[in-house]
Image 1 (cartoon, rainbow, N blue to C red):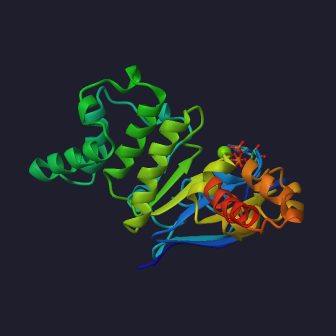
Image 2 (image 1 turned 180 degrees about the vertical axis):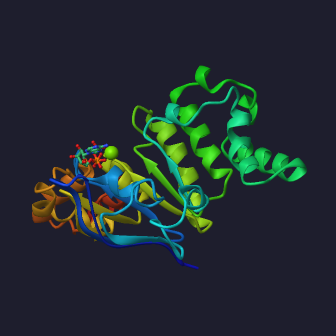
Length: 277
Ligand SMILES: Nc1ncnc2c1ncn2[C@@H]1O[C@H](COP(=O)(O)OP(=O)(O)OP(=O)(O)O)[C@@H](O)[C@H]1O
Ligand SMILES: [Mg+2]
């Protein structure tokens, strides 16, 4: 199962006419994908992502969410398809309990009674939030607030989840927990679009990476293939994860290309140890 959920066709965009921000961008997002959107500050990641649910409309070209053209379908209807977790979860949380945050979206979509309760409980369980259901989000830690913001979106069952730097300020443990949740959602057929500056997360979790430079897509590849292109990356301000740089430094000693995770590195290294010993 891999339907095309979002189709971006030759879009350009400018906040003010003198300064183009996106230039002739085309891409598709399919169900089951775990896609990372990377690029230096100001390269246009957030601007592009806001086109996925109609928060911004292209100046040229078109964006189709399913069959819906984002220029003509109301943002509210698109939000059922594409859920957006903003960089700062506090912009999204506005109710006095975790439970109410989670109930809000599905209730607005028309769920009520036992069906709504079931949706809330399933969501609380899935995100490990059941014990905090009556807590006020403001008193919870940053990681739990992020989980609550994602859970509130999940409760509406969008097909695509867009997360703008969701791990900023989180420790590794919380970041991993979030990535595991996203991995499961992708396996269930949702699409994940993860905007991040954390290349280790990209290498460890994304199946596909889109690299933006000055509002243009300059690479659409697997993490392993992308991180093996240092010349291209040097023009984009993106540094491969340390283990990829280590593997590249050892290429003259026979380390193969395409290594960007600790697991991949270890597998190769152990094979070579076997040869030496
Ligand atoms: N609301 C706005 N009005 C005018 N210009 C904007 C607005 N938002 C972003 N820009 C400009 O558009 C360009 C792309 O910004 P965008 O926020 O999409 O980049 P980004 O890749 O998400 O960056 P970051 O990694 O810092 O979040 C930048 O030059 C930015 O200054
Ligand atoms: Mg941004």
